[in-house]
Amino acid sequence: MELRETPDNAAASCTLLTQEQCTEIFGRVERAARSRGVPSVEALLSVHSEALTRFANNTIHQNVSEEARQLSVRVVVDQRTARASTNRLDAGAIDDVVEQAIALARATEPDPDLLPLAEPAPVPVLHRFCRETAACSPEERARAVAEAIHLIESAHQTAAGIYSTGQGAEALFNSQGVSVYHAETLARFSITAMGSDSSGWAKASSTGRAAIDPVALARSASNKATASREPREIEAGHYTVILEPAAVLDLLGQMFWDFAATALADQRSFLTGRLGKRLFGENIHIQDDVVHPLQSGPPFDGEGVPRRRLGLVESGVPREVAYSRASAHKAGVAPTGHGFPLPNEYGEAPLNIVISGGDSSLNEMIAATGRGILVTRLWYIREVDPYEKIMTGMTRDGTFLIEGGKIAAGVKNFRFNQSLVEMLCNVESLSPAVRTSGEEAFDMVVPGMKVRDFNFTEVTRF
Figure 1 (cartoon, rainbow, N blue to C red):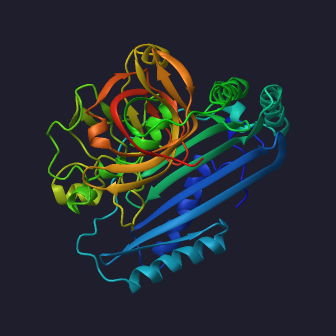
Figure 2 (figure 1 turned 180 degrees about the horizontal axis):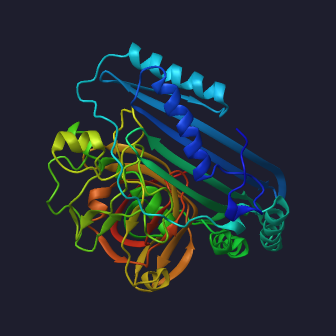
């Protein structure tokens, strides 16, 4: 099938499937399934493209672009289900992938708990497609990168990072009448400034690239590298810590897979036996909210169920968790629209995290701290204790000693062992929440946090 540009994106450098094209493809899928005696069929369609400009040693060394499309077909045959996928959308490929899905389903064991396909329900339309982001050229990215590199070079530092722009569309249809579609764009800029014995880092993402200022991010990274030169080595121990939003995301992003009904049913969630009980400080409020203006992603889940806003934590009390259709059916409740495409072993998870912020700026937090540590971000995070959610990891790219309400010096990086449950009981103040990108976790809307008694266990060697 020929791909055409979406009507509102004539200037874009690559193409997306329109909703009308997706409907046409699903018609072919459904006819192919019915001709083989299978009336229950679901199709997940996606087209994504991304262009990436990568730089290191103050030089752009890579400019690549990639476009991927996929048709994933799931059938239900006599309480059996299976999925097959293809990256071709011609009539022959559609027939083949439907036949493969049916053959796989008939080869599986029946699942007595398998539900029929989802029924249609209203899904909100979210406008997250930005023409400017979709149409961004390699030359435009290169100019922005060059300005950022020039700023860092002028500070006698070395820059490395990426600038990417992309667009994507996802659609899900089934023979029960579900028909949902979402298109959006995304831009990301990440930069590390490196000195002889220090480094600084900054990163931002947005559906609209105008919201990203590469020069401002480069200046922030450069300033951190400058301020952390000749880092002191101070002893490990319990400190008052100010975590910038990226560090909050890096750490707390590890716990939201536990806010899932399947994880609770399997007793592998740290929330087991704790829902409805105060677990964190009263100033902790966490939602999952796909329609939040700083969030991104489709407003429906892997079965086409609309995503509902969840009050995960209210005043320190875990209240709600995500339910797929299967886990909701077992629990006798309504699904929340957080399930993954079937079949899967994970069930569901909230993916649009919004942690409510406060009114203290990071500078105000620093000024109110007699002695403490400022952390830019964390990495190499691993779980030590799943029930108390004790995590270990290291600081990097800008760790500072605070003395007398001021940044006194850069310090050598620490390893930490910290319970997230304990940490969220010790939050003294919060900055306003912002859209934040980290190293590995999905983007979230989070504040900076001032936390008492954060446990650093040792000084690292780098």
